[in-house]
Length: 207
Image (cartoon, rainbow, N blue to C red; front, top):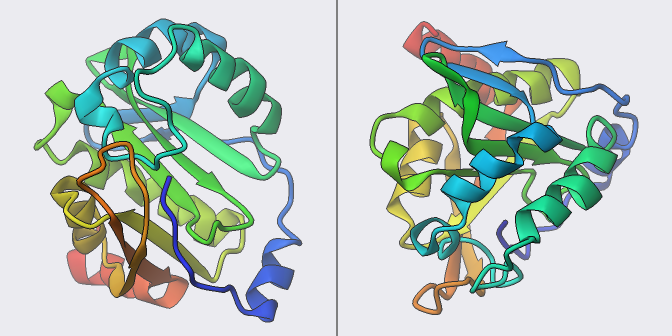
């Protein structure tokens, strides 16, 4: 979750308001399976998410220390009731371990102004998994939901998140003030990716 001061143009807001209710489909990439988060995923979600090195990069609205029942409440009270309405949440699973959630990618509308967030368990960092995971989510946003552009945000200094944006064709468009779990972060990086840019990026990488 990130903060920005950007304002969506009226034409973009009106288009997103027409988005249909579509339940998140399951995606398979070279190494991963992305499927909707369910109640059964809560133990693995807790295992990999409740880690200061993961949570410190998130917006200050996320509590730390993280409450023992926080993941269960978040999944049951927020994720499941909104799935396929204005929020789409995928668990990330390795193909060789298809029952253990190792991270999450989510997409939402309206933007805050950002439209996408993600986290990945620490032991899985540095292997290109998140870059691989966000690609089908971008496709879904543009091709199924009708987004014309996506806004992303991250803490300035969060190099892992920064690299995911760079590697998937997003443009850095500015910085803004922000508050994060880790008080060392106090500024955001704001990014934009249009459908046209995403299509060009995929052609250039022959994805």
